[in-house]
Amino acid sequence: MRIFTATIDKTDSVHDLKRCIKAEKSPGFDHLAADELILWKLEPPSLVGRETDLQTALEALRALKLDDSTTEARRGQLHIIVQVPTTTNMSGFFTPPLEQESAKRLRTEHNDRFPSAPPSQAGVEQYFKRLQEQWDGPFAYCNRPASASSIPVTLMHPIFAQFVADSRTYEPTPADNALVLELCMEMSATFHTQEDRRRIFTSVLQSHYEIDLIAGKLTGDGFSSDGHRVTNGFLDVCTVAAGAGSCGGVDPFLRGCVCYHEASRAQIVEHSFSALPCLLLVYSGLAYSDRPHMDMLGPLLPLSGHHHDCDMKTTAARSLGAFRNATRSLAKYYNEELPGFPNPLYPYPSSYRPLTGEPVHQDFKYLGKFGGAADNTRLLFYAETIGPAGNQKDLIIKFVRRYSKAAHELCAALGYAPTLHGFEELPGGWLMAVMQRLPDSYGLYHGLGLDEEAKAAVAQLLSDCIGRLHEANMVHGDVRSVNLLVRTDGEIGIKVVDFDWAGGVGVVRYPINVNRDGIARPDTARDGMLVTKEHDLDMIKFMFRP
Image (tube, rainbow, N blue to C red; front, top):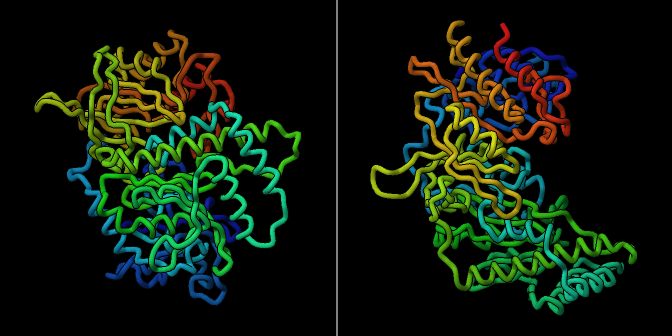
């Protein structure tokens, strides 16, 4: 543990503190965005340096607010622990974990860590908050808080990815439109109780889609739903609301997450090969790695709009049609298709078509997640091909929403990027880039401490790489030290990575939420603006300025 001091004003926020810590630890934290730092408040501060149970002494730092009666307040001090993302290692950058985790063991440990909750507490926000703020990881990856996020459910089972795709492209049938019309008429009424609303909704759904959702107990110890379906013993569709007998502050989505876990508590261990997909109305996907994952699959749909609002009705019909398709796929999965994918701790894709033109798919197996399971900043995985001994390829598998295959291939052909072995378009808007895993002789440029001569050589190679990209009328868009790998074995060589923002000049634009916090970028490199050659050149200057 390294102890240091950071000084801020009393009126500053937690984000201001993170920025101060980043500046205090420069250059060691220069490659990190301030919001990537995780801060934990130590209670009481006298425990620093002692052997103690950290889990009971730590709480997430949410606000810089002290009780005036505390010693800390009188001294104007806070004692915190700074958790840094594990991707700061500079050597062995692409080295996977030595041991493979067992889904069955991890799920058993999760059950032991989180005994059954009282049914009345399921979904109570303050109770759920305590579950999520455990030192050794949250109860569920459900984006509450935002740091409690890992692999999206649309990458854990293709049914969810297809649901998202259908929600955008499915052509509603007369049956879908008839369902929406009746739902809009019925759900526009004023109901005396939540039970009345539930009963009407499930009745209309059953009459049009023959999806029978039964309200009642999910488990023998009191957990219940407002409507669920069990297929071959597995919970595959569920809907919940803030129950009348619960404590205040009940969130139906959090309650659904807890109920899903309790209903599946035994099955997650017995069927450790499966992600156990389940739909939570309306519309979330639930799946299991070592713990529950829950993500929204689409927007909430109002069913009491104006009768002339045809766009809303069409959107609702498309979403409900996608829901019907997904329920059919779930029924087929649980009735016919178990077992599932090779390892539910990782995304479901496990093969790719080689870009060399070979006619067969190449299978691969995952070896680990870059940065660990809780790293929600990137979906990057270690893997290797499956084949005869001695012929396996070491791989990096990357899942993104946008990527320039052309820019990557050009740089790889010049020797300036890892070889791109495969590139797949997946349902739900995902892209999978399968690339060479570099040997340990490469490390992140940032933090290597190169002498001036070596820096100049690296700058020349990077300028040549970006220049050749520009000659092909393409841009990179995110030329930074964290996207540059440099040889560390005494030879001079580079590999540029991260082509998410790359593309054609005059075509490709910056995504939303471009991070400018502590990261030097040109003034016009902002959300939605065109990526230019000048931006790339400016970023190189920023990297190598004295």
